[in-house]
Length: 100
Image 1 (tube, one colour):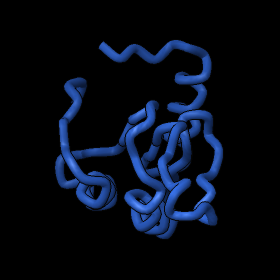
Image 2 (cartoon, rainbow, N blue to C red; image 1 turned 90 degrees about the vertical axis):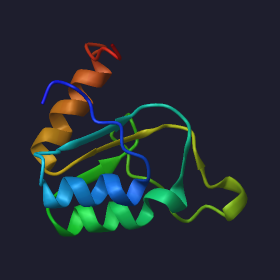
Image 3 (tube, helix red, strand yellow; image 1 turned 45 degrees about the vertical axis):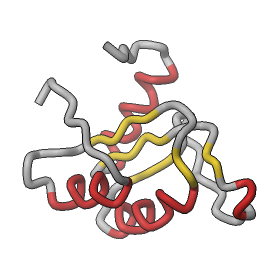
């Protein structure tokens, strides 16, 4: 679907990607505003089902940080499969991603 779905909550976003009931496949949030603790379970679930969740630069998230350092400053890119994730990272890093 070319129109983005606005869904709140990391857990619901991840479940929608895993279940794909409405063909959801991508969670793109390339800016600060998520806590590592908000996405840790989502990361684990996506990995277990063949998906991938990283920061906007494609780097794995560091969950060893303390609670005071848990603000994720590099955003989130998560996909239901690793191939789509790699394409999204490439498009983002090339500057070809439009927020409009």
